[in-house]
Image: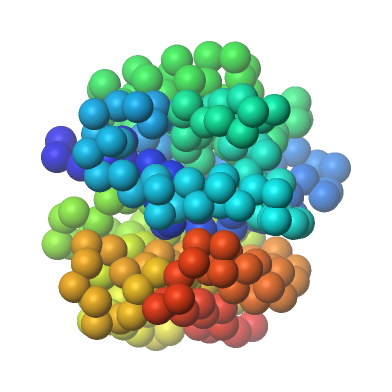
Length: 282
């Protein structure tokens, strides 16, 4: 396994992904019935910021580190997100962070006793770390399988409500194809579920092809949200971060049209841009 998220924990893509994730989970929490949260590529759950990997890239400093430095000026969901991360991985009173929590831990802390999470991680070392990170959360389960294969056996869930986060590393050339097939199959099994698909913005061509296939797929209600830290033609490893949400909650589009520009300003991303529009409407 070459990819380890420890090198990238808390970068600007994480801030965007986790803010949208919290918005999705909060929408599910507004209704009393229990729901399930499923994640196909979960990672280790939390990431020490003093690790060799994190210090070697320092991507945290251009992501969550900037939000933390401007903590007192933040408002609304941005401030709530920063405070939640501090409670999980640091000293909220002092404003210091030692560990950045990944999406499994952020999600687990929001769940009620009537809700549950299924976290899938194929790599053994990462999976064992994830199990340790979630040991206090009894309504979570960790599975050591290929995320795409495991998803087929989990849908439809008995709760009939909930969401799936598909968040691979995109190291493999065929990753967009695997994501597309997993989404089509997952939606066929669970047409009312929320599916969130994260993707990196490096080159626009593979994303355009992926979006085009989804437009032609027959799926409806696909919201596209993107945040770029750099212009499209920048020769950096990661220009931006994108999320597609199938069956988004009511008014998520309105919320993200306010939230993403606020995040861009807080990240001081002067050369980038944000996007929130319907890839496929009703």
